[in-house]
Amino acid sequence: MATTILTPAENRFLQLSQRALALPALTRLMPLLRDHPTIKDSSDFLPRSAREALLEQRVDWLVQSSEAWKLLADSPYVINPSNNRLDWRHCALCHKPVRYEYHVVLRKDGHKIVVGSECVKKFMSDEMQYLMTITTEDNIHAVAQYDDLTEQYPQVPEILWDPTALPHLPEKHQRRQRWVHNGTKSTVTGYLKRPQPTLPRTQLNPYLTEYDVLTGIDREAATVAQQTAERRAERERRLAEEEAQAAWQHAQHQENTAVEQLRASAPYQTYLQRVANIITQHLPLAAFKTALAKLEMPMGLQKLVNSYQLGVMATEFGRTGQIQAARLQIVPRYLVADLNRASQKRAKQRQRDWYDDLFNAAVGFDLTPEKRQTRLKQLQQTWEGQQVPTSIYADCAKLRDRLTAGEALPANWPAPLRQAFTERLTGQPVDQWVPAKKNHVTTSQLRRLVQDNPDFTTMKHHYQRLYALPAAEEAMTLSALEQVALQRADAREKRMVQTQALIRELLYK
Image (tube, rainbow, N blue to C red; front, top):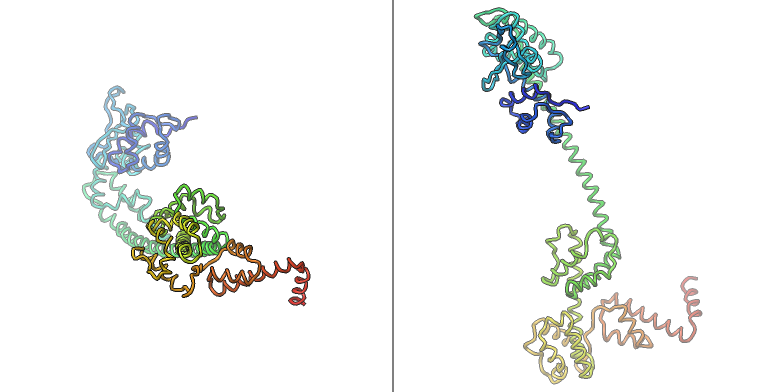
């Protein structure tokens, strides 16, 4: 069954009162209220927002409206002398003919309406109903006398009709407040029931004086309550901040720990090096993404970066030689820094390798002219090789002969290339040409070294001719080569079992 949210009388009362109320929500509903006298919860014209506003605020709007009106002082109450209902005026709210007219006026702008006794009781404030009873039963001039009284003593309506007055008054003083209320009401009622030319100053004075005292007590209690609430709020705010800070620090610690574990993990480091290797090849974007797709991204990285973001970083590195990824705000900064560092390190190594390879193709290796040209052409196809003029490769094809004849490096070469060749020439013996030694070696290069040389002495000679690693790394590499040579010798002589047995006996017994 549909429920009526707003009756026609309530609707008209809100419309008549709206001009005196500062209620934006009610003002917005005025067109709807004017078009539809009765509003039910099932009305199809009722938007959901309007329905919610009416259900939530209807009672408050009616209460505020009731306080916006007062009885008209000069003619608050009139009895129509006619016995014919057709001669009676109609109530502005319920639209029924009324013989007993109550003239009410809007406090804000003086707009007057006629209201019947039932609607006064139903819609108007307690103050107006109080005055209506006295005006009807005792004194037609009660409203005018009441207006004079409240103009002189504006605290009287607050004492009599405001249930929220003195909200912070301590409980021990509330009996005094009731005494003030009852005494004031008794005095005012006695004054209003008979026409009187003078105000009841003497009778009201004790109650108003006491009310002033209670108002001061309420104000002090309100100040104390506010200070207490502020202190409580401050304590709660500090506690909330401390808890939030502790939670943030805990989360930050967990995140930092997870980041440290990720960055220290072998899959992360391996993937980083492989991506850096692809980036430093300066491939076109499509080729870069194809090469990237062949790599298996570690699980811990899959939520942090994707192929598009890596493509943006690769493009930036190709353009500027570094990765900052300023546009990629959601990519972790440590990942950007790690990839930038790995890419720059790899690019520097590739450049050094290219200088070594170009020097060895031109000077360091004994090559036939055909093989030299082939090797130089291969070096020209790399990205590093495309950064120097093509005339360099024609010079390199004849450089060894020119240097043997005592000529200097070509003066028109780029300064970095001249410097790289000068450094490598400085380390050359006086009686022969030797290749520039690389500062790193790969497993595949060592495997070829093992396959091409039958014994350790030959392996070591060729290794030391081609590579110059840091001391610790070189010691480990030579030890591995020597062990490989010994195991191959044992395998040829078919003494593997005896050798391993003797090793166990020497080491573990």
